[in-house]
Image (cartoon, rainbow, N blue to C red; front, top):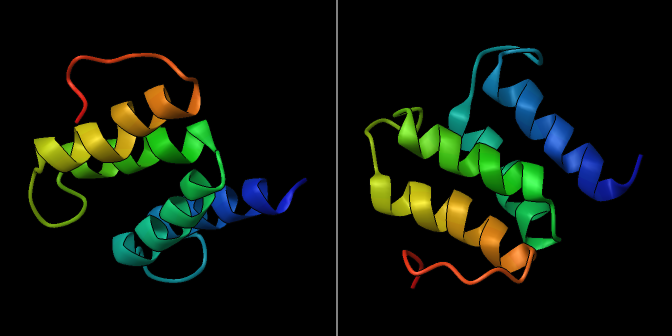
Length: 83
């Protein structure tokens, strides 16, 4: 397991309450670190959290930018929805 995979796993654990209380802010922190290091899974999870109001309210712009668009950038795929 790489450090990126470990960061993604910690994000998952935080989002699902496997290390104590469910903590979406902490999960986002770990997912963003992993996403910045190239994890497509973490990018998807960021989008999922924002799209499903885990951050407090639904934020479609952040869901697209944090999830779909980051994943597209990671894979060098053009996406007309992304800025």
